[in-house]
Length: 356
Ligand code: 5AD
Image 1: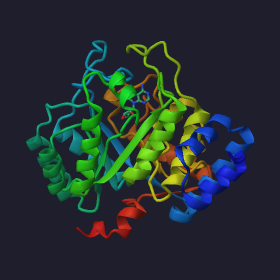
Image 2: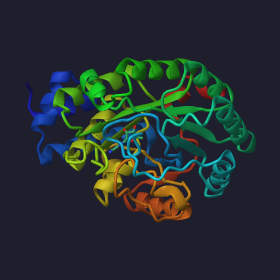
Image 3: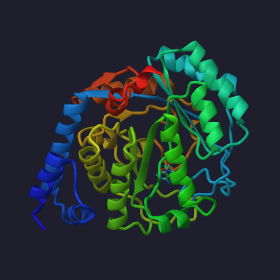
Image 4: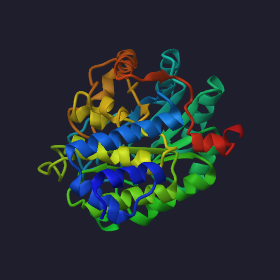
């Protein structure tokens, strides 16, 4: 196997590596190699997107969840969570505020909460689009029937985030006792076929996750060609079965972000809140390692802390406007510029799919 700088040069030049090369790279990477990897990831980001960082306003509208993922703080069996659900009227009020703060993408995220029927969601998406025709709507509501995804797309939803979580079937099924690996993949496929801009992604440092699993995560993403790729460290939550496990590290997560940028250069990659939670400069470091999106939280402050997928999540006491301006300052201080446009992926734009 060639030495690390050669491998890094190779992935920069070709946007490709074999699984064995990826495993070798993440196993042997030194501090100095990491800096080289990040600098190439940053160059690649600049070539595709310049210095722009896209902002998305994130509304966490319900923490009810029918699933029971072992890592997640809002899993169905966590009886200590105080559950909340925003009404469509309250969600629309968040959107109004988000619009005034300049956001042109609203991300509607929740646990898998079937209180929000197809009818409720379709009417909500339709109403948001009526009020703000130029805004992109991103949904992140988990697994539903294909017919539901179709109706929501028809009513105006543009994008859908659904992390694949891990590309190892065995690990996936261990961590998701109420879900099936093949269903997840089928949902992602269906969302793409319907025409959504799709976001997939995974957690780094899950208990039992191997380097081969991480290489497979990247290979799967390269094959799926999603528009967005969310990568964050696993952070243990004390009210889950994984409370005593170790979490993912800053370095390992940044290496995966940089490799995702190099392997799937046209993707939109958020500097995740989980990275910002792990390290005070985590999101800025991700931007310097190839990320180009930030998703400030616009959930009402009164319920924010209840949407705790993991603990000590940042911005719990902040107001939506605090996050908006805090993040702008951070992005500028890191040497990038905020872009408040819709921020479609270059893959999506070059397919002409934005003219629907
Ligand atoms: N630590 C880090 N990320 C988590 N997620 C859920 N629980 C945790 C946790 N404990 C991630 C999952 C999910 C996304 C919304 O948040 O990857 O898809």
